[in-house]
Image 1 (cartoon, rainbow, N blue to C red):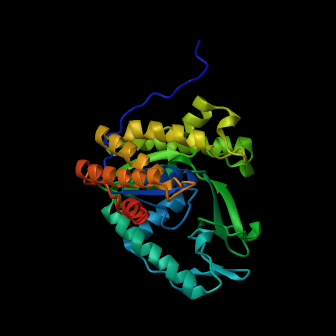
Image 2: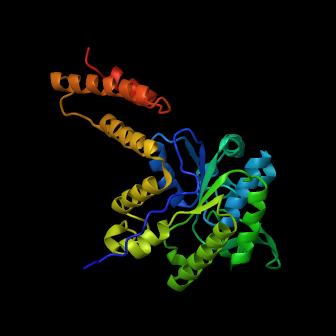
Image 3: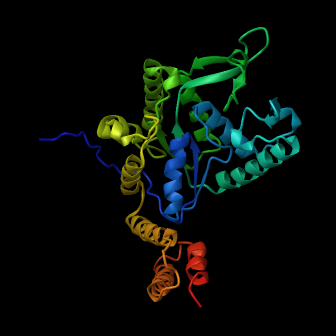
Length: 331
């Protein structure tokens, strides 16, 4: 008797290996996947502007990175004691406006380089609900904001994107800054409870229809990874969620990563990723008695293992771990 509805693995149109550069944009789920990829030594940059939740803010970011646009003081707004931008996450907020702009423009520079070098993008949509900055006397849109920074709700007009809006925007991107690049789309399984359960379901449905329409139109360029279905339909139990009951637990994250690696990576890169995980786990180990002979032998054996792996997988960068194992060996 089967008590689950497991997701079948399907390969991407172009599998990922350690020679391909990546850029991940979108909700915190994009950061989860990209974090696992970086741990596996896959070269990927994640969210230069910080977490992005809706498809329009992701698209704005892609266009900004392509243009390499520099931000000036007019981009900033003051929120209490801090200066911030509606285009950037709160991590960029600063009491010093010059410092805020410096961090933002550095992110643009680094992100522009990442987009230019990227062979593929992983884009995770979190919600179809958007907040548009409204004028003082009407709800005339001045553009979708990526982050409201806790400004009063009256400053924004909230609405739900249509499937056609999303599809049209990404059609333009696929013919413009994303031309020739592989686009891997996911819908975040993280529920936006502030939208209400019905509103969240409607939002996710909108995103799913838009994603699948894009995939059907561009089967050789656009892939879909079913992270949403893995949490909602396969695991579908609160024990696979964190304490907030909305974000995936560590167990769920590991399960999704396992499926992603099987689906997205080449066999060689899957094996390289497994070896990299072992090295990183060993580097994180902290012994009770670091001066013992057994620990010295452990450090020496791990340094030797890294040298072996560097010969077997020259595309992997173990510089940080190698420095740790060699530097911490007892003299």
